[in-house]
Length: 374
Ligand SMILES: [Zn+2]
Image (cartoon, rainbow, N blue to C red):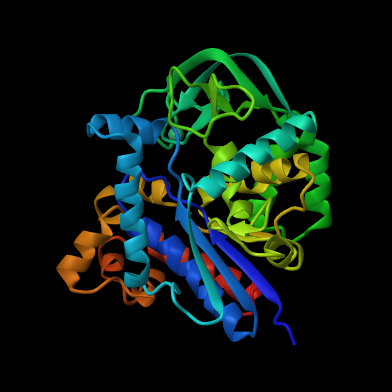
């Protein structure tokens, strides 16, 4: 008898910084779910990797005097190396571990096919554009989202003013469709209070957003397939990794043919389980779901929103949360164990700074007991 398939993914961290403990939290928690599903007798696909395009990365590479590709190769390798040290199931029978890079040729091809599909369906158009943009979030900010003229998550960064002709995604067309999707799938977003938050956000109305940049200003992105003056901008490239990782559109995984892969891991599973931090709520639960509908694809299965995200926790507790993992390993002669990461009792950090770990434990225990039967 064929085992029931199960597909889980983390978000892909930006490679503008080395892997730190905040990243480890997300990898390890997703890994625990992957292993649990394997123990329940399911055939598991576990996706993680690195997000390698965008202004933030381009600026960082320039600052270091490196070509963007050389820079992302270096940092992505560090993320890949850290996986086995964290005890992630990279080589576990019954779990297919996949480390995707958004610079992988098969992903770039998938992102371009996705773009063309959405454009042909009438949800991409070009217009003149002027906006305030937070490079830290890689998101446009409306006035109502700012605190003292700054992004509340990145109060030390100046907002960029962007003015040019860009391609837009017709996000505004998806308000009703998203609300219907949320109505039909009462466990699409867990926990409930995060689901309520995103329902309220969508109910207030959606604005179209820019999904390209002029290549002459920012060259580091996936080329827009039918306009060589533009590159795609971050989310419209990166989020597609959740389907390119499992073979969309050509049943190719890492350049190799894998017949029936997309059907097995997306259609037969009922979609992906996305594990992410709370700063990703909007992108994972609204933007990505609208993108899937716009391309005629079925939605995700579940989006697990965790208590803390690296960005938020880092702003609250910078010296501890962002300790590079390599430094942790060299000072402790071992990687932080899953227990250290998920349990405040055994975590050295918790003695110094309790709150993120404590709230994180409460949150994850509740999710796992109620929603996952763990
Ligand atoms: Zn920001």
